[in-house]
Length: 124
Image (cartoon, rainbow, N blue to C red; front, side, top):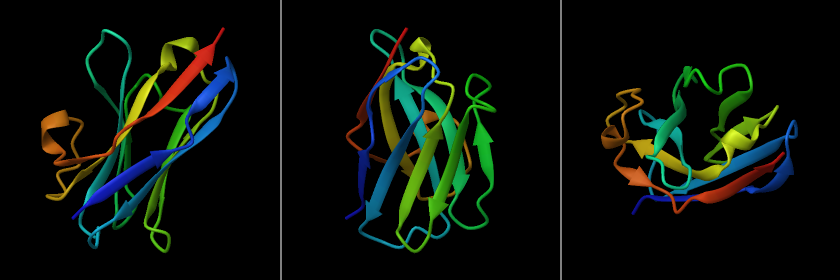
C-alpha cells in the first residue's frame, strides 16, 4: 500500500524558509511523478511543483518559480520542497501527491495517491 507522509511545516516569518519532506513507502516509485500541492482556507487546492522520480525533471507553478525547489532522494525514498522567500500568501496546507502513471501534470485528478498534509503559516 502506497503511503505518503509529509513533515516540516510550521510557522515562519515572511522572507523566511522551510523545507518540507514527503516520505514514501509501499512500492517502488520509479516511473512515478511526485507533486506538491497546497490549499489555503476557503480556496481550491492548487499545484505547486512536480518532479519525475527518474531523471528529476521539474515543473513549477509561476507563483513559486525561483523561490521553491522540488527535489528527491532516491536512497531515502523522500521528496522535498525547499521554500525560500516565503510570503503570507504561501500560507496553506501543503500536500504531497504521487501519479503512478507518470503524466507530469499539474492537474489534481492526475494524482492517485495523497498524503495527509502539513500546515505552513507565514506571518507578515
